[in-house]
Length: 236
Image (cartoon, rainbow, N blue to C red; front, top):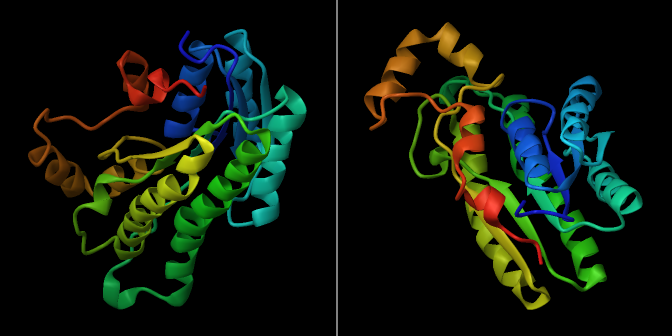
């Protein structure tokens, strides 16, 4: 129970990796605010957390809106008395060929994946600083922050931005005993990526050919990683 008594906020926790994180955090003893733009899915995840004996609050959060991110942090404070951990997980993918990409295509991804991470982390960090007891902030980058892809320019750019943003935030918040770390997963089969694999079987083969273990990741695997940084970080 590495996170016993800790209070966590996870964005995009209505399904996929975010839901797996919320459940694992609960298994490790944390109370969780489940923030997602899809209220019904957020409630489902919150119910799973409660089934594990932890407290949970579901809140509708559009990370593109600063007010929503601040409200999610307030929900954590009001429900649990403070915030110890924030995971900026919410993200979208919108694969459009570079020459066909519109301004709307670009803005849709950058607003969620980059601006949304900034709003989430800033709101959480301000509360952690006010509390004076430090904290942990986790961002979700991607293997795509390291490699190029002709059909995912905006997504790759956003994740590269998350990577350097994380480094900058870590430097800015270290004096307050707040650590900031990014996790860069490879391909994980979630509600966001599964349609891509279904529509483009060649993509699955491309990924498998370049993956040493010859498998696509699955959110449930997170439960098996007993030494994972997600579950051994102690927000103290």
